[in-house]
Picture 1 (tube, rainbow, N blue to C red):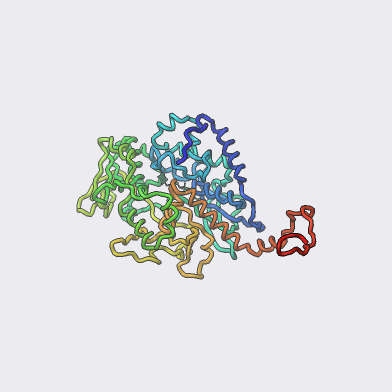
Picture 2: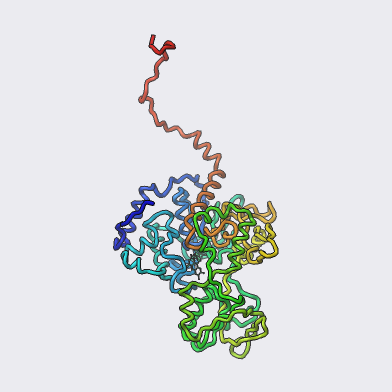
Length: 488
Ligand SMILES: Cc1cc2nc3c(=O)[nH]c(=O)nc-3n(C[C@H](O)[C@H](O)[C@H](O)COP(=O)(O)OP(=O)(O)OC[C@H]3O[C@@H](n4cnc5c(N)ncnc54)[C@H](O)[C@@H]3O)c2cc1C
């Protein structure tokens, strides 16, 4: 195996790293040749979401010569995604050396960005990527590539208009945008929303929050805090509450044991990334359902961040069935007949995939084909949450539940966590997103090209620039020769 022992990245500085990237991109003739015939007043592709997925999709499309793109994000600049909003872990779970959104460019990796500033020794010493630093890297990524994200712009509704899509937006200079293709790079809850169990909906809102909400942890000082769940977000929120001086923090966990093995991470490989989508429904369901059933454990460091507090508790086998307001707090009732009084409840219940929870599609959301419409799993593999994932086409587009009722869905690409059941882990977490973005760009290109095939054909007919001008050769008469090869 070839190995390159040394390079000169260390302490290069970000300005020089940017120059190196530019030089690499120039050598690769970036951006690709602009080949999509323009249509007046129409954007070829709109990407909703300027987080890491939206950005790498932009890079991928641009590399492929699709330049008429708009990237819209309702977040303020530099605050896209969860990293500096509601993510509360100290470091990322992902290993530091994953290449993530680098799209094959070494100078665009987190490692290059880090070593260019802090050198090899610090890189070696770094355990996990600090969460806020990851956002700094993403900001550098955006600046360096000059990605024209329009911040503060929300896509509120998508509707068909002929063979195009009309987006109703707020926060932009225009109220609507007309486009040919639309990419939902909308994140972990990008085709669903926070999971809010029914048992909490009647409780006054000052007594509870979901982990994805803005929470003022300082008001939890000296309070009894119940955290429902024990996944990564549940743990991170418990840590914040403990560090803010909560009297006690209790994880109330339905399952009887702590999940300890990260199955999906364990089998991650290029083979899984490339091969998952081609598997049968049975196999795709089996992999995903098993990963759901075994659950992803909270990260090691995050769990220690909580358990080092003596007033942190983990209670398993505590399935919440009802919550009632009680005095200044709430009483939580469990399936085993016991109960517990808390002053504040944090839901660490994660997110659900459910197109109906998104406002962008309006009523058409009900027309999106889901796994539960297509596949009936064996009894021991049933899973309602997985059943609500969209059953996507192999090009990331949505399918209609009733053919012919919403054909425009075939122009809408689901490049977020919701694609996982159909296409694998290529459009959400850090590991597979460059592969996913390359795949998506190829599919968008293929569709744009075939829709314009008449124009491309005409261009071929019209193309008349000679490569030879006529003085490169001389035409002569063919003279008769003999079979023996001697010229007569
Ligand atoms: C708490 C938490 C911790 C995580 N930690 C990790 C980790 O360590 N490693 C890992 O690989 N993954 C992690 N993830 C998963 C993480 O969400 C993704 O890796 C990453 O954020 C995905 O990037 P993205 O671009 O798909 O989504 P996001 O970064 O969420 O970006 C989506 C963007 O879409 C915008 N948007 C959504 N809807 C609209 C709309 N209608 N109009 C305009 N803009 C819109 C949002 O404002 C947002 O900025 C974590 C997720 C959470 C919630």
